[in-house]
Image 1 (cartoon, rainbow, N blue to C red):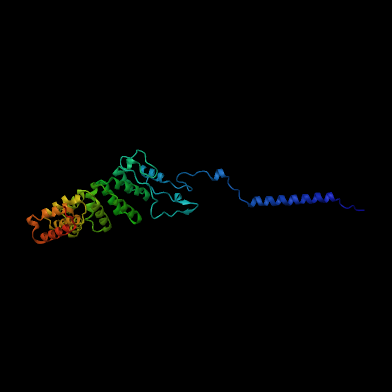
Image 2 (image 1 turned 180 degrees about the vertical axis):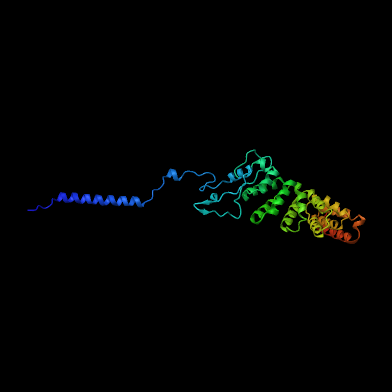
Length: 312
């Protein structure tokens, strides 16, 4: 007679079966799931120019100063495979220190020994450095404001385009050193780049120095192109600084009728007792008493009289 299986045997068989099924399931899942890298490996720092870290502003400055002006590689311009789109205007940066600053550069600035070296600044502007580094060089040139610095900046503007050119023009407007006047005045002969022409004229008109008018008169001397002469003479007629009076008087005494008549207008534009006195003095010269010169001088005296408050 067959014996019925005992309950304990049935239980053991069922337990073994479930254990086998569970183990098979775990092995299947382990094969399907990719092994994650541990945190220490995945977070290892990359080099300064690796795929996961962008070169800092100071890295770029050091690269430009050292003379390494090769464009940043394509790998360094990507993060997680997505290309970075550069902003049309550079990120605002601290101003370059003026002459006499500390020997070490602050973050985001050119080293002082570079910021005061026109030849080095010109080298950076002519290199393949990033535009934000070039604009630091342009800012340093404007702060220097010497004639050679102004010429380098003007040449860079002529060769620039787009937003970069606009930013260089902005730096040109910051020139206050009258030593730059000759370089600025010469751009007034350029009738092809009228934007640069107008910006240079505005800088000259804002200078509180005799050098401004003197440079314009010097730039006009010997010029035969009528359009260039008119452009230079127009700048004389727009002078606003009392410091320009001596140079305008000198031009008003000269033989160049165009420069003389525009100098009369410049004195009237300046106004005040000093400019009026200069016009009256010019009226005593025989050459200024007849013809167009005489008429323009009388008009200038009339305008200066209206804008001059009489003294009691």
